[in-house]
Image 1 (cartoon, rainbow, N blue to C red):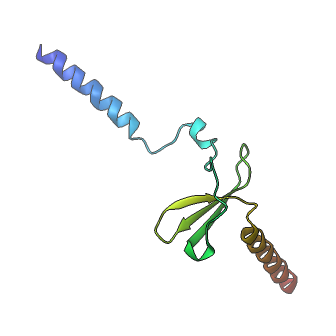
Image 2 (cartoon, rainbow, N blue to C red):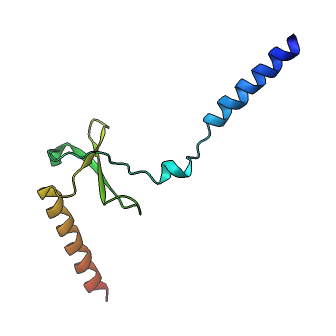
Length: 99
């Protein structure tokens, strides 16, 4: 009887330790981060922007807000389009100077 209890406990521990694995299954890696996007995120509320492009998903913009919340912003947002345009122009100018 005790042996069955120990065996059951070992099975439960193995099952729990398998779930705590930090690696994500391949199916999780291929999913899109942004399932819905916002159009009305004020620039002054944003602490950091992340840009993601994965093979199966469209261009994704993730904003980390000053309250540590992360939201997805629509890439078609006007201020974001202008921000990206300015950043590309700055990169082009830097490359011209270095060559």
